[in-house]
Every structure is written in C-alpha cells, then in structure tokens.
Image (cartoon, rainbow, N blue to C red; front, side, top):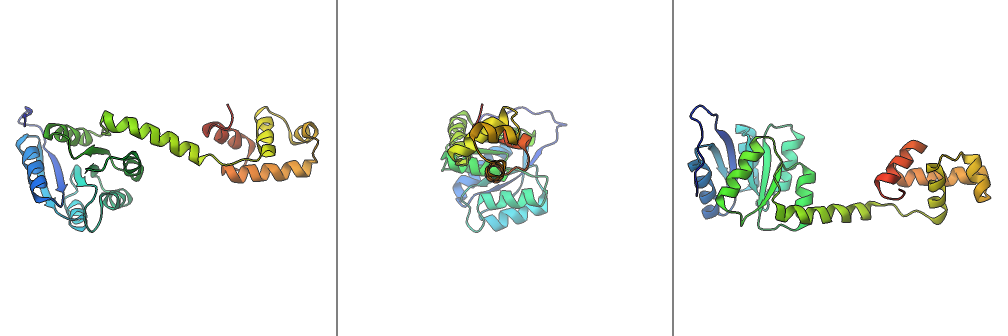
Length: 220
C-alpha cells in the first residue's frame, strides 16, 4: 500500500476497527497503522465488543463491518448517535445494495464503502471521516440517488380526486368559501376534506400543507 507523508507534529487519527474475519481485519489494521497518520487504538471481532471499545476509547473514527455478529453496524451506529459520542462511524460491507446504504446513512453513519475497496481507498475514507466529511464512493452514490427517489415516490400520500382539487385551489390562494363555491360543495364539506388532507400530509395549516405538497411533488 502507498504511504502518505505526514508532518511529524500532526496528531494521529484514533480509530477502532471491527470485523469478524481475522485476516481481513488484520490486513486493514496493518494498512491503516503503516500510513503513519492513524493510531488503531482497539480491534474487535463482534458488535458488542466494538461498541464497548468505542465507548471506552471514544476514537475519532470507528471502521465497522456492516454485518458484525451480536450487534450489527447499524445498531452500533444508532447507539453512537443516541449517546452523543464524538466518534464518526464508517461502515464497510460486501453488501452494497442501495437500500442498505440508504439505511446506514439515515441511521447516522458518516460513510459507507465496499469491502472490495483497495487499502488506500479505505485509508482515504477514514481520514475524510476524521476531517468531518461524509464518505460515499461514486459507484454507491448513483444507486443511492435512485433509492431516495423511490422512497420519495412511495412516501407520497394517496389523495382522492376531490382532495387533489382542493389542494390545488388552496395553493392558488382561494379561501374555503371560494373553494366551496367553485366546487359546488358546502363549506362544512370542504372543511372535512381539508382536515383529511392535513392528516395525510402531517400538517396543521394551509401554508404548511402547500409547502409539504410541493416537497412531495404533489403540486408544482
């Protein structure tokens, strides 16, 4: 592995590495340590040990296998975020489906890389996480964009035809009596439709309804 020069007075990045495959873990630890920029303060072969080491050492970065026995990488990430630990979690996995990557980042991971990444790529990812950056290789980012779009479309509430009409009129600035007159409905009936609309959008007023509908692509 290529070594990266580091000034002698620079502070080393403190890292915990966890992977249940000894040979892979040892190779990663050796590569990180030999860079001269990283101090691997602890190793772990299962999730509970990894979390214990993170809590004890509070390293800058925890490089964790996504599929650790005991507690998996997601559970550890959740615990780190929940407890407000200063450690940034970088997950590494042989599984790189967009749904898995999405869930990892949603849980609070600072990055996600494939196990097939070269050692220099892993080193760069760890250092980037330590600098406060989020890490996602281009080959995973494209799939994540598709996943976000899919989830956004699935997140859109199903509105009735009448609710969609009322939403459009609310967005145009019409009052409830004006909407009632335009749709030949009673004001009370319109109010009922509006209340159902608010419930589906998770809002409590007109402005919020329009903003949320625009965010979800229900109106332009």
